[in-house]
Amino acid sequence: MALHIGSVAPDFTQESTEGTIKFHEWMGNGWAVLFSHPKDFTPVCTTELGRVAKLKPEFEKRGIKTIAVSVDDVDSHKRWINDIEETQNVKMNFPILGDSDKKVSKLYDMIHPEWNDTLTVRSVFVIDQNKKVRLIITYPASTGRNFDEILRAIDSLQLTDKYSVATGVDWKHGDNCIIIPSLTDPKVLKEKFPKGYHEVKPYLRLTPDPSK
Ligand code: BEZ
Image 1 (cartoon, rainbow, N blue to C red):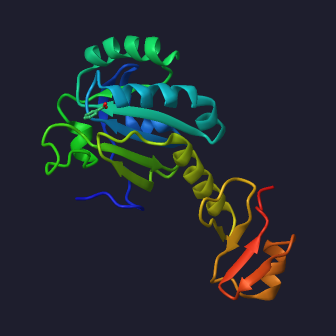
Image 2 (cartoon, rainbow, N blue to C red):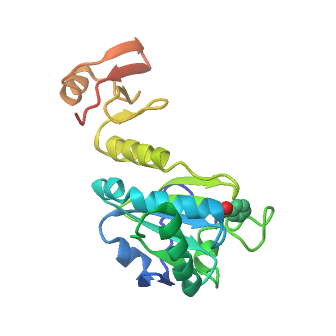
Image 3 (tube, protein in one colour):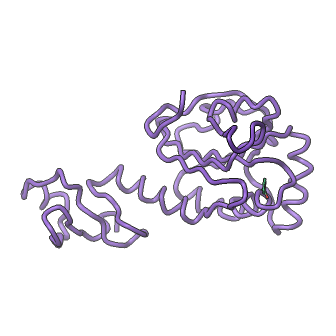
């Protein structure tokens, strides 16, 4: 069955460059970003893995662990890591799942046979502390992902979980937010948004970032 936003992220046990991973147990009480790579020793993936290793402090700040998957085995990943570290000037600091049996790729529908029936596309799954899928992004193999955008989207998810707001186009931490349209009671609005709000239209009401 296809995975959707709101689905429980499938659990699995699989070998990785950091030993055996029981996914839900490995996640603990935090969030995770699980992302796939078509194949080892490929150029775009090499740059992406280096970038995610450099962004580790940013993911950690948000309570997020990252984990990659590629359809080759762990020995191949370990050889590839030498190249990633050499070319991207970084120390790898998160696991890459071996997936030569395609267990994880199939579980998460990362193989799109109309493109290629053995390699994975570039999938990203953001999974929250309740093991629910919160965001799914799919890129083709030839287009590297923008992990700043993934962090930005995670900031929105974590903010909107906490406050009765949505975030508009190109929103970044600190920008004005949008009050969710279902909130109309003036008393509640005053309680929830003590800094006030600006009503551009009755359905478009802007308020300062409530987390600041
Ligand atoms: C890459 O990661 O560089 C890549 C993988 C498959 C097809 C094209 C590019």
